[in-house]
Length: 323
Image (cartoon, one colour):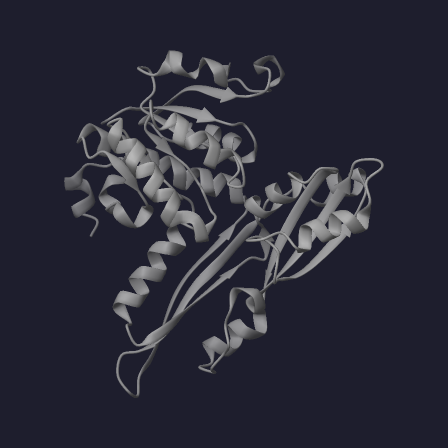
């Protein structure tokens, strides 16, 4: 069994999820958590270090799992860390993945490292199923629905706004559209009309609700163009009703295997904890990242580039018996 030594960069919801998930994997060892905060203020039984100490662990860590946000943290940190470490991240801004891949691929290859980008469930597992279903049913259409649940990326984007103390965003799918697709009706699907975004926000004292609302609903790549509701609440209500992190969604492809026969391909997830499941996907791809590095297959990879056999701790022989 190949033992993979992991470093966690960032200790928010996703970082804590990775910490929990590693404990379930016999082939994984957590070397340490790296944070911009004072390590003394981190409540964890694992070793915690300041991010400025990370280069001291260059030869002690096989893969870094980057657990920061996609809006600012990952685009800034990943290109720097990929010079010295193999990395896995959950960069989730779909529009910018091609250019992000190109940048990370160049850095990883130049430094003989492996970087797995945009690992999670969307982008991630949903991406695999969109591509697989299209290959199987070339005469058809893909539909992706998220929620109802908490989007970590969108929630993080709101929290980055000056004056926001706490925030959470729920993505709500258009159930009528889902039902129409299942019954064979034609729909005019766009992400903007297939989902609503429901935000709950706690403001710092002295900030204007109208100004913050405008900043949210007009935010490019996140909220602009969507039906978005912003609810301002106090911290007590937030702590009581909005601390959970459920999510899920589904990929549907409706296609034809002949002129008269319809086929529905569906892949769905129902998650009690979005960050813990995303962390579990990242851990599996960290295993793949380490193996690719051992094989000296340097460069950047998305989830669609990596064969499933790289994700499992089982031997190739054991896996083939499961087929």
